[in-house]
Picture 1: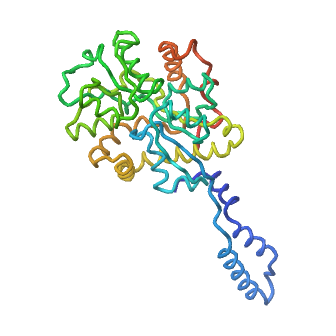
Picture 2: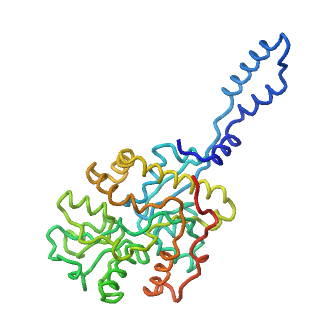
Picture 3: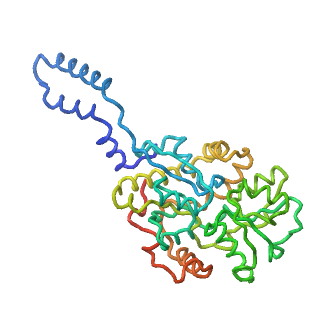
Length: 354
């Protein structure tokens, strides 16, 4: 069972009035006379009556959103729900999926969700005034993002991408950032590859099939899926272009961080407890992936083996990875100057100890 001492104490205080009442009865019950048996019998009956009439403690209802629906790296939310981990931390979690980082930031800003799983580069939204802050990093180099091309595409190598049109989710998203990053690293400048913001993978795939775009910057597991169906193939993975990186971070509304830090702490504990469970349970994790991402067992297994190593254990921010993001935000003209760390994230809850 995955539970910290602090969480166990919290649950006892929050949800066990029966044991508290029983303790009081035992404290005042006589122990050394002939009435002990009768008192113990009465005590037992009282506890049973109280237990039958005490409502279960209501879990805190929290809302978490994924920036996209198709990302395997975001399934700690679903694994935690499937295996009762959120409840152990006093949380009833509502999970939703959106159409990119920009839409995730909009949902957080409008108080439609409390927490969001998004990209490292989208921390720039906080610098631009979004009332949101990153509270933990949970995925390192972008092993989960690849360029996906059509099955019979004339593109054979990365060099063939120069001047081509690649679809991304939204402007300022991780997929957008990675197209620019690839172009810069290949020596073509920030605009050596053209970009079309088409939203989710599901909306980009028809454009790829009809030749309206030359490729999709998409989840690696989505690439595995279209390979399996004979509709496309992976050209190159993005981990080679950002080996020191924070691909994904957890965002929270600043108001929630200030007003309800205990909820933020418990959410992060539940999240990283789910990550720990995933690392120890491939089969169970893959079954969740099959159901949530509509993957075959083969794709789920292949994705797990390739991507599990990118998931972090405690939410820490790596200074070298943060520096890459800062420099790139300026290079890509998303910001005028490199921001300070506290403009991007807080370490108030780190390291996370589930």
